[in-house]
Amino acid sequence: WSLLSHRGLRLAMLVYLAVPGVFIGSQLVSTLQLHQAGYSAARIGALMLPWALASAIAITASKRLLARFGPATVLRTGMLLQASGMLLMALLPQPAFALAALLFALMGAGGSLCSSTAQTLAFHGVEGEALGDASALWNLNRQLSFCLGTAAIALLLALAMQWLPARATGVALALAAVLTLLPLALLRRPQQLSLPQPENT
Image 1 (cartoon, rainbow, N blue to C red):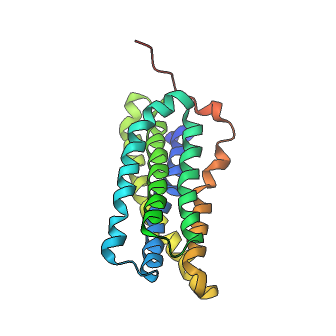
Image 2 (cartoon, rainbow, N blue to C red; image 1 turned 90 degrees about the horizontal axis):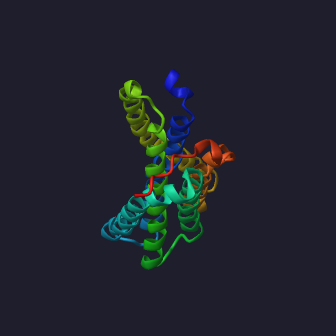
Image 3 (cartoon, helix red, strand yellow; image 1 turned 120 degrees about the vertical axis):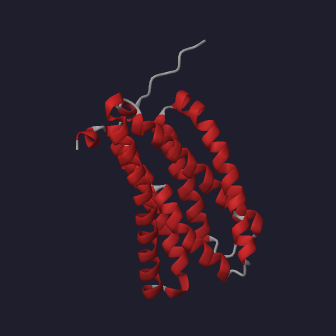
């Protein structure tokens, strides 16, 4: 339990639940929505290419962004990017392929900015002898986030299909965007998340 007193680790675990975890769940909804819009399985799968490219760019840039702007700003940016992609997908149920690719790129960039920053926060300041336990806890939370994210979004979709069947996918994606933004409430004091600045060489 002493590890859970580490604010960075607690926040990082919540971020992983709300951002990468929710994204995994939202892909069930996005796939259904795009299928209903007439997309083939191959075209839906191809949308993961812009997602992966944007994700790689975000991970590569995250170290510099952290050093320049701090973790709170990077996390906020990532959450807003992913939530924007989900919300626009909700509002545009039949997007052109180029637009859908852009929305997936937004989600890829946002999710990876958050996951990379969360991992840095999770282990920053953890003493050497506690790193093993922290790593085990982090990986457990990481796997759990994918399960819980999928279950939560599936539940929201099921409820939406019951109450608003004609707009179920849009409602579920909009609620996924809201869930993505939940950790923003914990970033009101960004100075508590400061990381040491790299030494100039």
